[in-house]
Image (tube, rainbow, N blue to C red; front, side, top):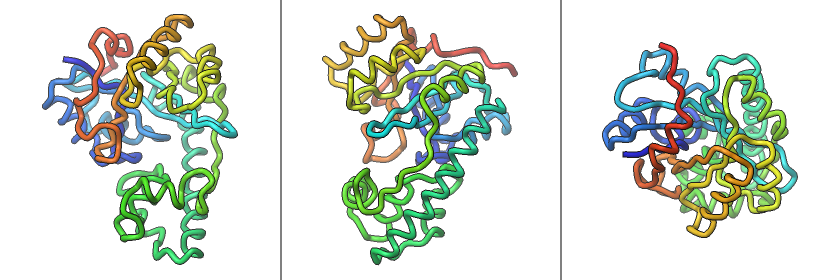
Length: 274
């Protein structure tokens, strides 16, 4: 079969619980599953603390997706095979989550001044188990309340950069993120380079990271080839994944629609200590 190294659970902004995600991976026969929630390790820690990781049937690769500070571009670094209890990593995540909550409250305040009938409690209901409250939770809540027809529309009109309710937040620097990932025993991979929107910046980042997410649903064949050659040029690990969230508004609707070969996925897998 194959693997998917980029997925999210409902501990960040996905719709599947960690158990549901692992069960789905087993059902379709994935050999490798990377769980890479935004700014939280709670999902993978939930599996570990309930005796479900390490487990049988699918090789789980623990990860986390962290956003890096940049004045214009969205840069996401995924840490794979991190120590899910590493103190330095957890300290950074706590700081990021605190900033998320502050931004969350400010966005709700702005929306209310613009006569949107939305409360923090409404968003928390949408977020469920997630402590990593983000704009996607707010957008989904606005859709549920009938303010917009889709998450995309909510971002375009109110929540995206340059929109009336956009609020910036604290983000660590790229070098800080890579350093903390290394401190936690992991490898740092630049996620979805096409979405960075600046290939010169991507190449600059390739001199810092350990791997590049070459295979991604948004990448066209010529772009895959470009990033493949870039990874080879800088001797980087080649990774890929669907960015599965369990929502139809994303690039894939179902787990298994987008995968990478075992030969690539197995290079990211480290046998966990039971």
